[in-house]
Length: 277
Image 1: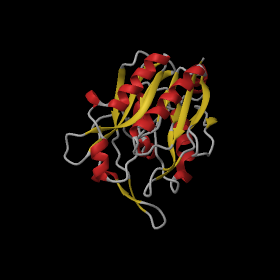
Image 2 (image 1 turned 90 degrees about the vertical axis):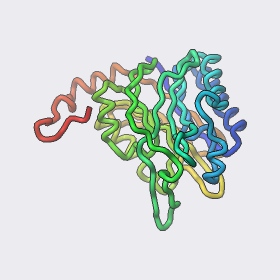
Image 3 (image 1 turned 135 degrees about the vertical axis):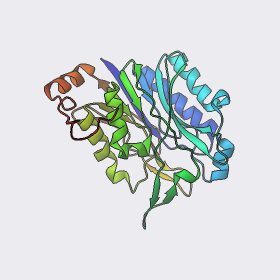
Image 4 (image 1 turned 30 degrees about the vertical axis):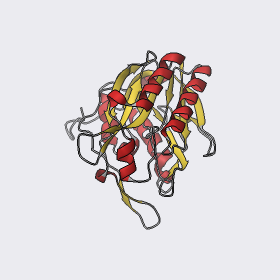
């Protein structure tokens, strides 16, 4: 049985500082004998304006932050899931991407966020991600990892069960959501994560940003690992002052047992509604 390490921290616009935090978390996860470590959405930086975001984003072939993550993965012989910004071909926008790096430092999977977050609540932030981010146009197939077959999503995608169902139909055993949930919508965080786990009989691993990034942005944290029965196996402490980590075993044998005992996907009625594949 292999272990996963889920993390949270408060990223700022200081890429060098964020890099150090993430490399330290990778090292700590390896020291705790985790096979894979999960870093949050926007681990490279959290900007305070669109202009700053465009200035800080980089193409993958010259992405200094990601190159450091790759080196750390290789040095510590551990797989890494991480969310970063990528320069977009669309003017004045970036790509919000989820990258999986293997223990050799190679990029083995890239997913570009498909659902753009928008919110206009009276007592919450007004956000329209589509103004600054190019939406992805495909769902990345699950990839084999030491923990199991893993499907990639990002943050707001969590609210749309269709992607998770499609990934399950493609063989996913683990669903991953690097995130930066707002404190206001944090009320839905654990509910949604456990729902995706139960309805797909899959492990869910959700890293998260936490704390006050700048005058405009604050994140909820509570990074966690959920098993296929919907049980929260591990959760990071509610503390934005220091980076957090929580570790849990990923028992694929237990997953297979649940899927055998309750064959939910085999009992679906595709004569009444379409199969998502």
